[in-house]
Image 1 (cartoon, rainbow, N blue to C red):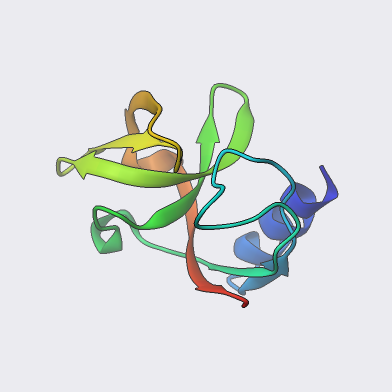
Image 2 (cartoon, helix red, strand yellow):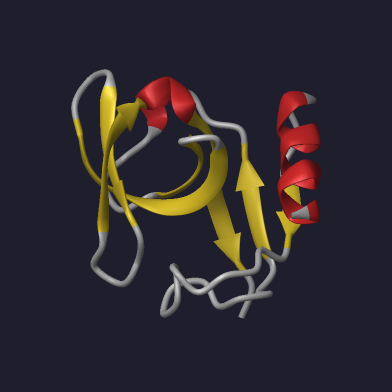
Length: 100
């Protein structure tokens, strides 16, 4: 997953990443290979319905914030699946732009 490495490198440097993630779980919002911009984010900035770049069970995903508390986020894909609750600290970035 080269897009993940590119994203991690940019975010760790405090920069935005423009990548083309591959996969189908965000279909309808982000199509496989579509250009997206992912920016660094603080946990208190995340809102319900944001698409976040998150560390999840040893992998990295783009998923939707379905609900949140002060310290946890409920994440899921864009097809209706809910993955579960995770620490807001596992969110590494937020999608700020999806190219047409």
